[in-house]
Image 1 (tube, rainbow, N blue to C red):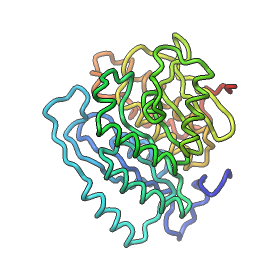
Image 2 (image 1 turned 90 degrees about the vertical axis):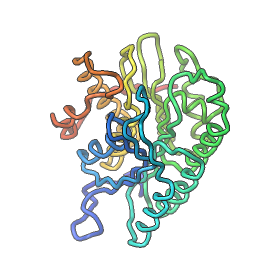
Image 3 (image 1 turned 180 degrees about the horizontal axis):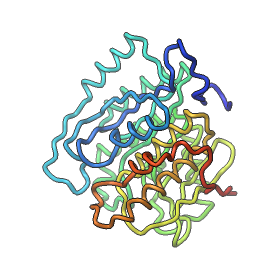
Length: 311
């Protein structure tokens, strides 16, 4: 055991408050399109985690390539849900956040996370703000984006692990997005910057470490690593949400940061491989993660080793 924040399901005793690790998962819910809660709930449940969803918004579809979708903001209801959870003394082994739409939502979740962390909960923050280079300067420097980035920095300050993509890491650190291959010293600098915000560890996805390979860059609090992801020159929607979900589930099942990062990368790679067998499937439908679960992925005791030490 690393510390009280690392939970192993064998530690959950019958007759206690819960028989499985319990995670509060805070994300939006889309009725169609594999993203956010529609990925986190089945993935983490299949890993043996009791998932308690806290929706930040409810949409008819996700927003990528869809128009005229419906959206119900859940901010006021989030307060009521958290108040009820507190009245019934509901405790969690982990709190994992994804998309948060406003400064108010971030403030609400910051308070919730802080209380749960005091009780020993693992805190995982996926600071969802955007992807790729974000070439629209008006978007990057809009008042809303600046507020979101500042709020996400506050969440990083209490996180055990943050899981931004490269774009989000650059927004958090207020540094220029590196176009093309990211040198090893720059990868280490980005990870160090996230640690300096207060995060105990970090896993940065979508990092191009060569012309034909992508990795997850990981800092476990002591050492720097790269987790090989291979590379397919195509967009895959929702993979960041899957990655953070598998990572959190793996941590709750007793894996350390690097091992959990490796398992998450391998699961995403397998889901992408399944998806590539069906070129007729639109990008906006996401990736085929369900067959990977169906075929017993999480029954494995070990996964292919994609880990390489940096520095």
